[in-house]
Image 1 (cartoon, rainbow, N blue to C red):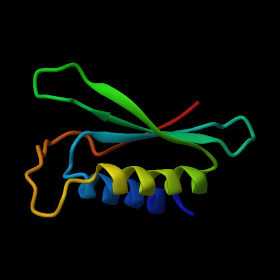
Image 2: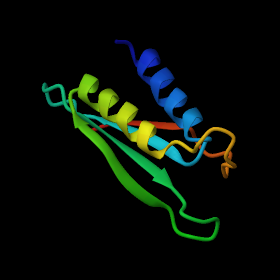
Image 3: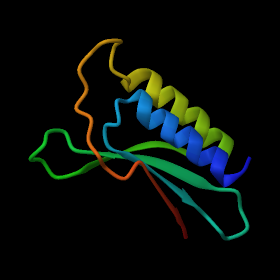
Length: 94
């Protein structure tokens, strides 16, 4: 899977959450296939940003965890969402 495909999956997940917050994907570059995904969001407009762990493991395991996270946290159809113009995806390597 290319980095562009991973970015597309993260962007699609963010869209399904109503553009609420942003996802961060961190990859380990120490020779092992490890990564983790976190979801950064503001519980209300004046709160400090909060972070939830979405998944960790291989890239495939992280993306499967992302799908489960969105399925549980996506707003119901037609529900109002507090869409914000935040950075949609952050990617880092350690």
